[in-house]
Length: 242
Image 1: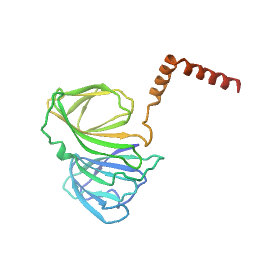
Image 2: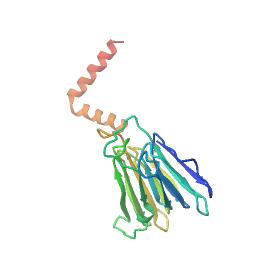
Image 3: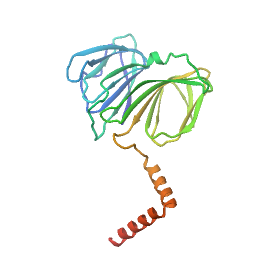
Image 4: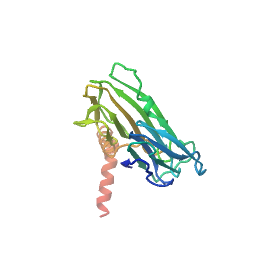
């Protein structure tokens, strides 16, 4: 996984239309731009889409694309890029443009002080599941610390939140590694609006943090003597072979 942000000046493009082996997400943080992307993989027929803050696009591997700043102010955008040694190509997401800017205008509220809306979900070539949702968190709202079995990237577009013991003001980028305890609270006077991306590991069995694997095996060995005996025999055989 790689994440970077770029500032694109008026009238500029970062590169000609090109392809990568990585899968990518481009999300506009401020300003406006025109995405230039082929309408089908390998077609080389390029379409243009005007985007603004909160809008993002998912590019599968080897999907031709670029962007251009044709407006009167610089545009700031953030990129996620990832690759895996595993590639499943059937029934996966194609390139898709998501108008997160529209979802973030929701006025719905709930008892927890925040409202969420799923805006993207599906399998990709490298991920078991790619998920995204918007959140409007009211002042004082939030959720208690918990750990997820997948990595999470958050684009805080506006507002102020407290997370991981720090106060963060938008626009900002927050990343939670799989298995890391994290919670969030809106500590500003105004709502916090952000977009969440969940990267659900490889295909096949669910990913489990190595730290959690050790804890689980220790608990099993203490409650199931046969596992402990088997482990001790393995240790003894390993020692005798030295």
